[in-house]
Structures are given as C-alpha cells and as structure tokens.
Image (cartoon, rainbow, N blue to C red):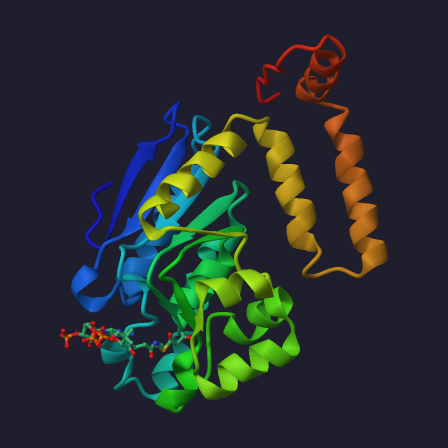
Length: 260
Ligand code: CAA
C-alpha cells in the first residue's frame, strides 16, 4: 500500500521487523488523522503478516511526534469532536498482538508521547523530550496521556507533567520507568531494531501470549491477572515451540522455533 504520511520497510537480519517511520518532518510529525490512520493500517498489516515478528515505530532526529495536529484541530467544534468521537481511532495499534517498540529521538509531546506509550517498549535517544503540553493549549490529553502516564511513572510525576506541560528529558524518563533504555541518538533506532529482531527470532505465538499477559496487568486485579497468566502458561504446553525450547535447553543447543 502507498502511504503519504509514513514510510514502511522491512528491516532486521531476517527481514522479520517492520519499521514504520512517521514522515511529516516539516510539521515535526504532528499527528493528523491521515497519519494516524496510516499507522493503524501499517501495524495491522504487519500484525497479520506471518513473516513479521515485531514492529518499530520511529520519527526523525528532531521529533518522534510533536503531538496532535493543532492546526487541524483548532477550529473543531464540540459537536464535531463528540459526534466524530475524535481520537478514538488512534488506539488501533493497541490491539496489535505483535510487540511494538517506539524508537524516540527528539520531541514526543502530547499525542506523540501518547503514541509512544501505546507501544510496548520505548527506547529513547539521549535528546528525547517527553511531555503532555495540552494544558498550555487550554485542553487535556485525549489519547491516553492521563491514564498511561500514571501507570508508567506514577500519579505524582504524571500530575506534575500534565498539570504544568513541562517536558522531561531522556534521563528522567529512564529513571521514572517511562522508557526501557536510553542510547546516543545516532544509535537509538538501530538498538530498537536489534531488540525487535531478537524478539522476532522467538516463537511468535509465545511472544504474543507473553505480551497479552503483561498488557492485561493494566486492566486486571492481581488475582485475575495471575489466573490469566497461568492459563496462558498452560497453553504454551500445547505448542511444539514450548517442547522445542525445553528440549534444546536440555540438549545444550539453540532452539529452532516454528511458530506452532
Ligand atoms: N501541530 C501542528 N503543527 C505543529 C505541531 C503540532 N502539534 N508542532 C509543531 N508544528 C509545526 C509548527 O507549527 C511549525 O510549522 P511552520 O513551520 O509551518 O510554522 C513546524 O512544526 C516547526 O515547529 P516550530 O517552529 O514550533 O519548532 P520549534 O523547534 O521552535 O519548537 C516544539 C518545537 C517545542 C515541539 C513546538 O513546535 C511545539 O511546542 N509544538 C506543539 C507541541 C504541543 O503542544 N503538542 C500537543 C498537541 S495537543 C495533543 O497532542 C492532544 C492529544 O492528547 C492528542
């Protein structure tokens, strides 16, 4: 499919990773509807493709994304946003079963920070800046900022960020648990691809089950979550890949997974 606002390519040692690059550099990758629709289509296609094991979403050195497109949004009326359920389609990528890694360099603000948080793992370049500046525009986050940020870094820090619009740098984001690792900005995308490649080399159904269990911890009580985890753990015993993984360990050889 031809895209206007993003680029997609297959990367990694076995071409098993889909790299989605947000491509509106002049507008610092401001997230307009067309761009987010294209991201939704690209990740859904990657999710369905049996050759693909993981997805990386990135921007450019200056901006991962500087938020929802303020110019597109500024004249919207209340009936328009409520009747059109504005932003509701943005969460398409959270239904993906394959892991998504955000490689963030530069600004990840507003919807850009929210997009990164919709991904499963964030790797940050050392020039990354995260923030939810909506309050400075007279509005509040609308694509999960008030919810995912609290779960990622706790209520007090999330309140501080959302109520002031202040940005945090990569080091603070790392200390707070918002991002998994920080790299020099030149190496960040490559490190994200290496991580995606490593995940893509593992059993796809088992990776999907592991992601499902961890994602469910956002929604479930500890008891319910542990029950779901145990059921998924038991389910891995229906897979040849589970047998192969354990046989390979016992035989001191590398496991060869077949995704079944
Ligand atoms: N929407 C639309 N256009 C944007 C944009 C956005 N969110 N962010 C940047 N741009 C555009 C600028 O208007 C500018 O365009 P022109 O060249 O046509 O003037 C271009 O990108 C470059 O931006 P700047 O000149 O402002 O670049 P800078 O280096 O001086 O500043 C910045 C960078 C601090 C990120 C600044 O651009 C900025 O503050 N952007 C807005 C950030 C923001 O408020 N994001 C939240 C949006 S609301 C939201 O996301 C709601 C939600 O929950 C989904």
